[in-house]
Length: 139
Image (cartoon, rainbow, N blue to C red):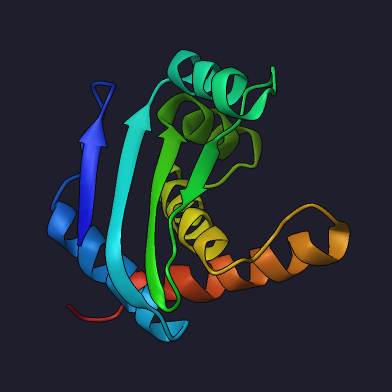
């Protein structure tokens, strides 16, 4: 089950299309969907989460809390809409593309993909691009 929650004015259009896409990502990695909650929020909201739960005093675009049980994939994925918009502008990409990248990034963390080293970042970026393409499959 994929659910979307909002701690900001932002809302996904046709959220069922996003839920279907996320389920395709999970299936493509050999997992089963347990429960994933996406929480869209502001920089301030996510900064407080980062300080409280990870002891980091920095802005970030995403924080993923992993609740996997074997092949059953579950978690809470917090996304700062402010960061997504700023990153889209900074990297000169469409806002919608950056949103898909960050949403896929969160799910990939649930499959234990990391992004700490240069090698891990390259693998993560390749996986993000692969999973973004699944969004455009006829639904």
